[in-house]
Image 1 (cartoon, rainbow, N blue to C red):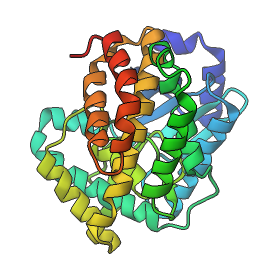
Image 2: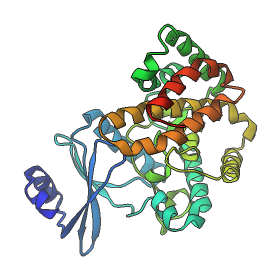
Image 3: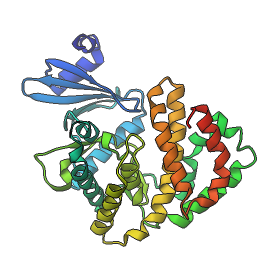
Amino acid sequence: MKSYLIMNDIYNTFLAKSDWAYDNIVPISPDASNRKYFRLLNSTGSTILMDAKLESVKSFDAFQDVAKYLHSIGLSAPEIYASDRTHRLMLLQDLGTQTFAQDFEIDQSLEYGRYEAAVSMLCRLQAGPGIERLVATPEILTEMLNPFFEVPEVANCTDGNLQLLHVKLLDLFNRSLSKQTTFSLRDCHVENLVWIPNRTGPSRVGILDFQDAFSCDPCYDLVSLLWDVRRDLDDDMRESLINSFALEKGIDRTQLYPAINALKLQRNLRILGIFNRLFNQGKTKYATFIPRTLRYVHQALETDECHTLKPDLSLPLKRYEQKFEVH
């Protein structure tokens, strides 16, 4: 793999300017990202090379802005050692070789403590002043569902009803979300979190992949974390973590459930649309997560907040399930 970088003059020019010498290179498999990552190792340690040339300059700048903000409030984003905006390259601090998800595969007893620390990190994040980001209004949250409604099998059975569906979804978000918005990481799940044992408090949780951050209801990241489409979480543990979140924020946990249920529906409908796109790009591994994602959607539709949408979404969801042969 070293020869790959030696042959890439852009990479090597960037690394030479940053004065980072490497002995070995290990490619890191990204999630659904268009970015490429490499771990560069030498006798003194390691660092991460990020290649974001397939993403926009806006996304590249957002990564730097959010990383700087997270540091300013005492949270652990990778330190940026060097950057090249023209070629969208960054040399980043290596926060650790294993994500929470990989740790849990080795030792499941770590789950509760790590999730508790992640919840505490979210509370610290939400207590900060924030920085200017897109505000996920009810209108924006409704618009974010376009990937689901654009799935051909779904679109074919919503003709004439889509406008009404949008009205009902907009009403759901207006009714159910709090009027407060806080800084949200947006992709907060255990594959984007790393444990840093030599730090204390919320800073023990290393945060990755935050360039899409926006401002949203405080429950957005909580739903992302606790209803992760990549893995199951024990229901009792989930309820305990919601209690911890409410206690740390000083609110009654019952106040959280309207937003939790509405965002559980919103996030997972959108994810179904994204998974369809990824599947069409040949990234078929994401089909593995579709049954769990559908389960979360159906759970949300049974709640008081979302049940009025159940008749409207029944056929679109059935068509989606038939496409991916989910039983």
